[in-house]
Length: 194
Image (cartoon, rainbow, N blue to C red; front, top):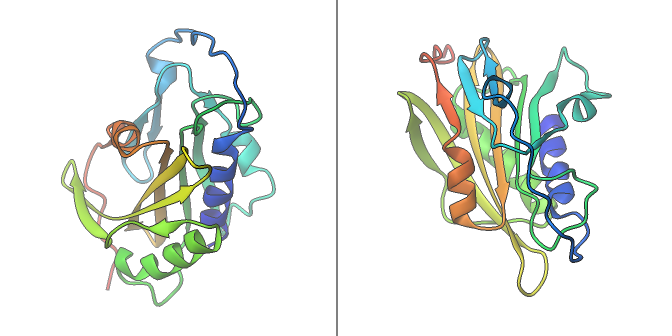
């Protein structure tokens, strides 16, 4: 649960200071530098060009035996001012509690944590499939100003005795969906044992 808190706390970083700031065109790194691969859970994430990686900073202080932030990338540096939500993707894995048998069982904890951060659920959780991998999805939103709303979608996977959460944060549903398109599974992860 600590890692979900880390992911949701990172959502606060996504807003940055609400102030006008010019956008600089992003540098064009090599294609290979923009692909995160995770062989443990058999997924990869295509990082949008120009996004900044803050994984190492978010891993500091985490107990890797209990869980860890696998990837934390932001559209702009979290400390950079902007007048929009700073889109982000945070992927974390943590040890599943002994009684957790299905990813759906984790949604209560996820919703409780999100609402404690000021988010409101958007609709009911749902199932989705990416490359034949079944995940559960919960969507949330949080009004930041009169004209600015932060949208968050978290996908949950239970595999290898761990909860893997894929959190996508952006200023619109469309931007969340676009960020979500970068997630792919290379082979189906074996389901958790019941």
